[in-house]
Amino acid sequence: MLRAIIVDDEELSVNRLKRILSEYGEIEICHSFLNPLEAYEFVKANPIHIAFLDISMPEIDGMRLSSLMLDLDASIDVVFVTAYDDYAVQAFDMSALDYLMKPVTSQRMSKTLDKIIRRHRSVAIEPTMKVLPKTLEEELFRKEILTEQEKKVLRLIADGLSNKEIVPRLNITGETVKFHIKNMYRKLGVNNRVRALQRARELRILG
Image 1 (cartoon, helix red, strand yellow):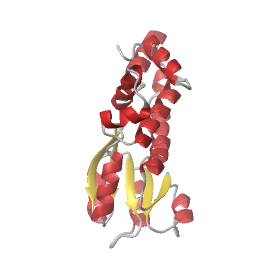
Image 2 (cartoon, rainbow, N blue to C red):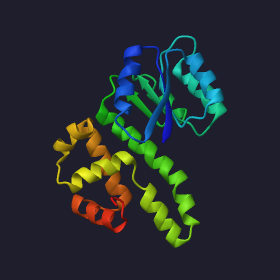
Image 3 (cartoon, one colour):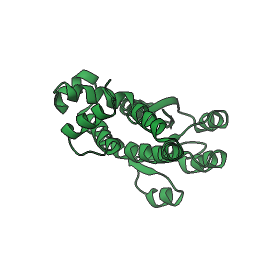
Image 4 (cartoon, helix red, strand yellow):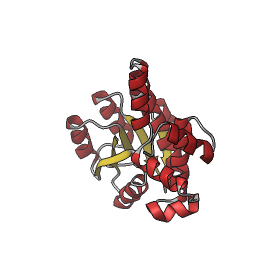
């Protein structure tokens, strides 16, 4: 589970981001802040993976806060969220992972999270699997390759449900369903539902 914080002095923006991010099983919103100084103190004492930062804030703007956080932990992925597009070049100069315009949509967020999750999986899982004996490698692959939410989607696909039918079952958006299916295909090395179910049976993912 990737630990994330949200820092934005507008409560409505914070709540919108929380709602969108809550749809993704691999992201834990461990805290949100209206005050950037409080966010900085939190990061001093608590490890996080991702920081969603508004740029225009009082006391410390998002650019400065990003710099301070990265001084504490250079591995933090920073995603800037702003109503203005004037800062895009500066944001990427600071090695921001992404730059989102308000109001953020689920579709746009899914692209950002796909990038984040892909990056963290390549760092955390692949090096580990390379040094494991084959049988243990297969066991780790079988147990850990899919998130719980992705397994839920896969089970519903196995039951014959369409994307549209999955939406109310899991109380998520259609874009989020597509996001999970895309991730499943990539992780299982397939490109359609039939092959995904075949591969899942081979790996005994669904029991």
